[in-house]
Length: 232
Image 1 (cartoon, helix red, strand yellow):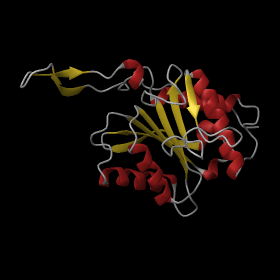
Image 2: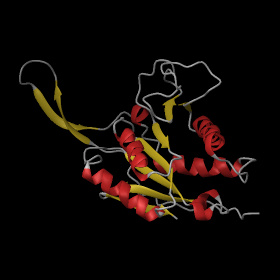
Image 3: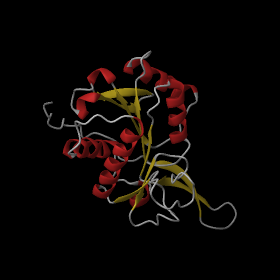
């Protein structure tokens, strides 16, 4: 039986949102005021951070009765979907994802914007959303580092305050090498240069399959033009 590890304390000095300088037009030619505006709290999820989501992720897995069962392929994808639904309920969000047994809405896959998980505030419409997603997530089972980078690119093309990539190391690459590949991919395309979002990357390490969920994943945050490890 694997020993359950108590939650690690996280530093509190995590930026919750970013200010932006904008030009505000009040009407009339040339009537411009330059000032600073902060994103709307509900729309941008000021109360939402990637670390809040991460704690819920580990909590829901540890509370799951099947947490030590072996899941592979589609069964693993389904299990992660169940966990995402539980996280969404806890964070007051509806989770849009692939649900084979349900009627599709706008896409035959059941996904929105081609993303695996889109967290919408429960005050918003699921059928016809009008607010930015509070969280968007790509969960990729393929161990191909280039395909994983493509999933990261998809995340960076959609606006949301919190973006999370969950992936797994392949046989020919370590978690650290995969992290560096994704880091270089972000820098090469300047994908984070103008973004005010939080980006978190979880990499499952296959050699730790008998560990707790918190030990199984290496977790990185993007800060200072690099992916910095916060859990390993």
